[in-house]
Image 1 (cartoon, rainbow, N blue to C red):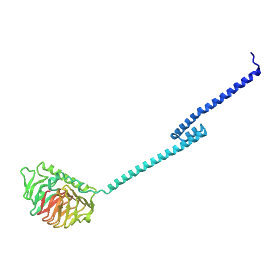
Image 2: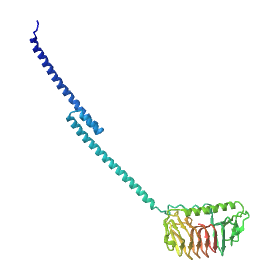
Image 3: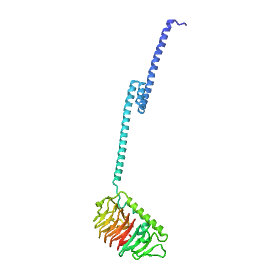
Image 4: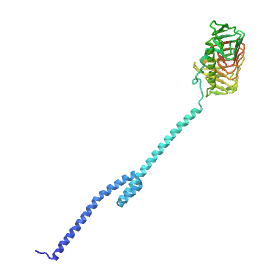
Amino acid sequence: MKMRGTDLIPVIAAIILALLIGGMWVSQNHSSITTPTTTTSSSSSSTTSSSHSSSSSSSTSSSHSSSSSSSTSSSHSSSSSSSTSTTSSSHSSSSSSSTSSSHSSSGSSSSTTSTTTTSGSALTPVNLGTAGNFVILSKSGISTTGTTSIVGDIGVSPIASTAITGFGLVLDSSGTFATSSLVTGKVYAADYAAPTPATMTTAVGDMQTAYTDAAGRTNPTATGLGAGDISGMTLTPGLYKWSTGVTINTGVTLNCQGNANAVFIFQIAQDLTVGNGAIVTLSGGCSASNIFWQVAGQATLGTTSSFSGIILCQTQIVLNTGATLTGRALAQTQVTLDANTVTAP
């Protein structure tokens, strides 16, 4: 059966209607399918914008709907603000704490260093070396008058034995030392038989080294104490320094406060003068072997004075009539005695 052209119109209209309905269905389905995609992208944009710059967030927002862009922009702004605030707070707190702690620690250390002084317990004794084998040691001579009593060895170098006067020396058969009725010990000189000359050279060298050691100690406990007059004072262990001479007119007490190993070092730029009858009293367990008097000028012990410690003198040591010394007289020039008692510590 043949269809007329007019019969095709309903068919064509039905087809067109069907196509229109189908297109609308496809459009609706497409819209519903892309909506989750937009939401996902928005979520992704929000996440991305938290990790990247705001320009990336702006670009992502512009490719979606205004609703999605608004959500993304809001999320980015909140996330960035929160992140920035947290980072700033953490950095500020950490930097402030670290800087404050470091500054406080450094300042404390500097303050401690600037006020440090040397106490007797911190001082080490002056090393006398082989000079410590002698109660009296001199480079240019030892002389005595009156009845002197010495306990310990004495010696001279580089001067010869002829510079030891008033002792009535008797040379030992070995030729290495001499004896004297005034000395409980031996007497040595640079011109005696070997090995005495070498021994004496070493001893004098050690004496000079000890003097330099004592003079070179730093961080004094006190400087210029009593303007050089320490008469009547009681001193505790430490390093005492004067740019002047030191005078002890009546006496001074050295108190080791129960520490038998405590050390005193006295650095005296000029003379040490001990008055007649003056007494250096040791208390609190002090040992004369740990008391060092470094004297750049002359050391003079007055008549009947009583002195304790090791005298390291760059020039002459003089003991006036009846003075007693418990310690050592180590002089880089001469030692002069007059009816004295000298005992090794």
